[in-house]
Length: 375
Image (cartoon, one colour):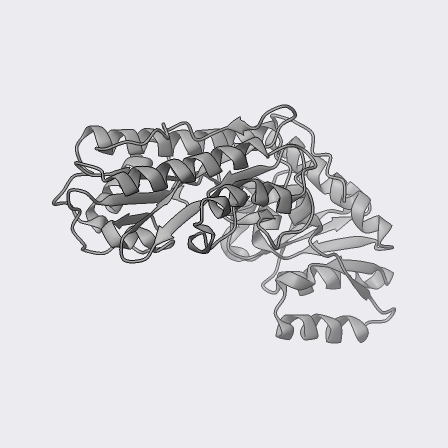
């Protein structure tokens, strides 16, 4: 599916343009309309942020409707003034009832529905007269979301900046020092992200010290930071719904030769991965560009995850970049590059940036220095 999301500054115009692209897609499936029930996709297509909603995208823009319940009457009017609201509780069913009299073919996000919800919809539509035919929309909206327009990139840039400044602030204040606990460092960093303009944090901040840094997704504990520890920090900020994602690894006080060696290996792999981010590059080849560096150094079994993932309204979204990935990188995709080497019982290093795939060279959004640093 070709995504052609234009660069626009008016959010309502951007949402309309996205719905227009979706219209092009579902009409090729022979559908007269699409019902969007994934809340992230509803937000992408309308700007609505409530916890209960579905969107009807019609073959004609004048037929678009957004359904939510009575709690959000004011909110939907403020956030989605360009789409007529419908009030109901079971929003997908409410929207299907709305179009049922014309006996249409409706594309639905089957991957976003539970088995129970799918059965309820098929039972409801099969009994209508004339019957409503349901077809699978697939991940059409997720495919559109891969390519970020200028407004989305600006929000990603602001989210990355909030994270960059927050990390610099806690380093300057001496928060990452021996005697602090992982949990204290994590909470301090999260607070600073809010102070720097974040609406939320992207995920629970990872602070992993010493041997814990060898655990890729370690959760912060009361473990005390000590001189000579690797300290791996994986974190992100959310601005306007868009997530940043960054990992930096430091050494406290003094570094051993093996720590410098592992760090420089990961840094070299990460640079190779960034350089491979070119439009239309197969994701498996991007992953291989970084992975081969670590494999050739004899640490392949200590690199246990993919190279990266898309980032946007969700912290993990398409495209996935890994050795089992599929497809190619579209120009305008926002992705992470995050190789790592993890030595159980000793420590580990991960270095991660958020970037946008561009012609020529990727645009780096996370700007915190990646030079090997002892703090």
